[in-house]
Image (cartoon, rainbow, N blue to C red; front, side, top):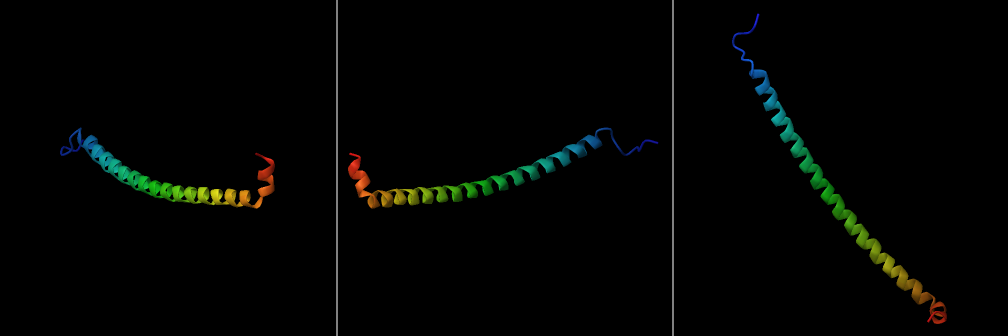
Length: 74
């Protein structure tokens, strides 16, 4: 009826071991996602810097093309 080789805590121990493996796998996946997000943020930061640079150049070009407008506004 009951298996004599099996102890009452055996299932619990096995579940704990499986949970630890699952947790480690989850932590590894999370670390990989964090690394990927870091790379994405770096690329976004570079793009933002480029947009800011181009915006400044556009502002300078716009001001240099409208000298009359600047003369009217002291």
